[in-house]
Length: 126
Image 1 (tube, rainbow, N blue to C red):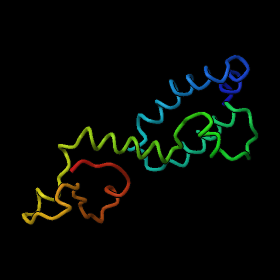
Image 2: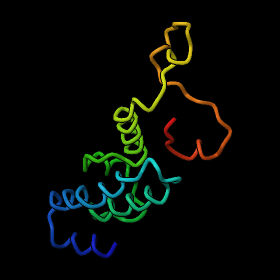
Image 3: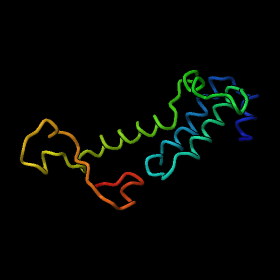
Image 4: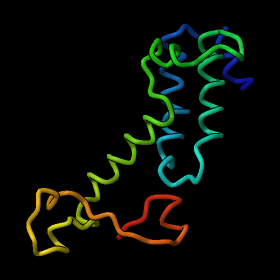
């Protein structure tokens, strides 16, 4: 946090955004879909956004994300997850590969049912 506060006085807003994207955004994006909880990342990202804009700690970040043209953590998580699935599509089964009956859902990905908590906590390849 101290680094971001120092950079606030040295860099302009465009340079701060580029620094954020080059360092923090890539760090988040690298392992976001495998982390069990995104709450800590969410809070840290909000703190950095508030420092970059120069507002107080209780200011709402909803408008700040739009102002900086950045995605919130949940949207970034969904984007990373969809990118992962699309790039590893051969590792997932479709409904038509498991069922001989051709329905309107035949091209959708098959969602395996499992009661194990390891399946519920993150991305697993079938």
